[in-house]
Image 1 (cartoon, rainbow, N blue to C red):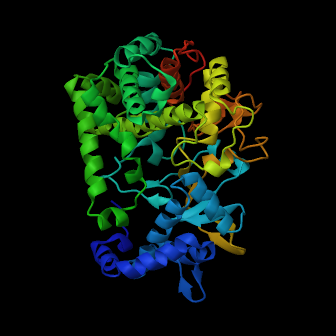
Image 2 (image 1 turned 90 degrees about the vertical axis):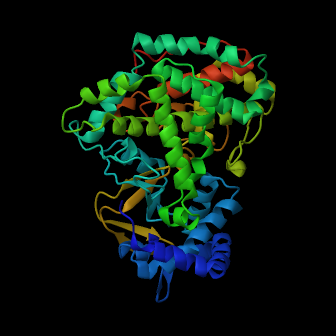
Length: 479
């Protein structure tokens, strides 16, 4: 759906034919900030990718994307494959102002801007990382992240309410019972735990996958089945690639994710869990019901896999690294300081004092989700590299949670690890101020945030042979 002219197969052929030239230009563009800006905004009479976007991305301007694609990839690699480091590099390249350009839209980073967006009704499109998403082959259509939250009678509101009612209501006895069974279930598979086990990424990922599936459905899956579900974490790189790149590599990424989606729905069918989605579908008005129901199952399991499993895996991996005083892989190493917690003993002691605070601070510094895509509500004047541009309403607008969490206007010594910081609950890691007094003012805050904290706590507790209460947010939980 919504395939741009510059993503056509004709464009892909041109990109291959001129591959050496595109690669050379891209390498220089990804290493030299001034050149990267020119590839984005244009230079003299030559347009950049911004011009292509504002012209609705015709095939005639595809060549602008060929070199830009390699420039963005080079910049990511040069920044240690850290998305946060890349964002900060680009922000600096465009003049360290309120906005910068990447992909098909403008990006904003300040806590003030992100907070304002997060508290509002957001327009959305089928877009990810400020580029149009590959729908319906890579991404399922009509998933929550693509739907605008424009009122209580919107499609977004209906699906979110139903998801909460049937799966994520932490006030349900079923939820609390399952969460409190996790320590025993984890212990049955993970014998003789030790701190160093937290460096075994595959072990963490499979344990998280089992936990998420159990909390959702009450079924503890097998080792082989968990191998399927960790694909939502191990294939994370594939989700950020635009259609032009997917086609350039022969749609290998799309085929992998399509297989993952099929296998994930297959697990639901294997355990006879279809009734859960039938009930969820029937609880919505005729206007929003899916036909057939398997479409709803695919959409919900996509969110469960992509955000629930993938995001919680990332949280566990980061916490596991922090406890060992290690910088997590693909993190912005230069922007994480240990402060007074510079030994394993100090880290473990601080975790045991309050697992929730420790997890929240770790994820503030190394968030599982670094940014999200909305749209400009109205025509907006922005400064890019010292020049003013007027951007039209409806243009993609990426708000960068990972940089907002480092805004010194909200967080004192923002690069220093400190679970005791007074503004910890102001962090917008879960797409809103999780734990703040006004948490309910963030309509798109992650609906699975409590489950994520509970599962991460259960997994890390096991590795440390520690015990703490789970499911403590049952009374406060809201959709």
